[in-house]
Length: 206
Image 1: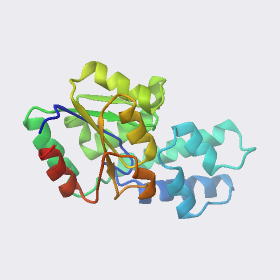
Image 2 (image 1 turned 90 degrees about the vertical axis):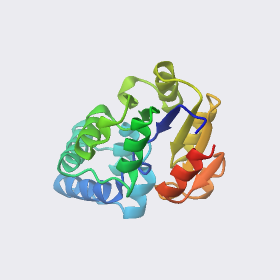
Image 3 (image 1 turned 120 degrees about the vertical axis):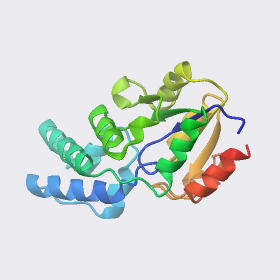
Image 4 (image 1 turned 30 degrees about the vertical axis):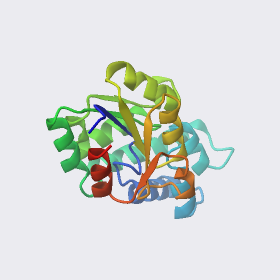
């Protein structure tokens, strides 16, 4: 592999968060007395910066404390279970053992990110992890990661914001078609893959 560093998005790339997001939103919104959006609506919001995601689930006039209820519900769900896509942990373990530098850049907040990493076991294999609470958009988070990790690097994610953030820094970008984004959303990525196995094979031959 010609890349010493791999940067990953979290939700929809490593973390299979669809069911978790729907369950957490449904539980919190029902408890608050708000209507529950469709699953398609909930999934369409995943990948936005955390505040925008929660606000997208709530009525426009909902108070700020209702955002906190949604946040706590998601974190509680993650602490119970943080499901990864099949093959993720084994592949990252192999990359880590072979000396690659692995970084995470996510629009999730710190509480969500830390719960997901600890519960899933991802924290064992990441050299750096940055989130929206670090005060930057996705491109800025990629810049932070690159300050600590070596180039050349590849950016891997499931939404348009991921490949755009990678390209902002001249990185090779890979779109993950198993995630929350649509296929057309990933048309601008340098490559697109359908499975973790296909991603691993591509990375080995870049």
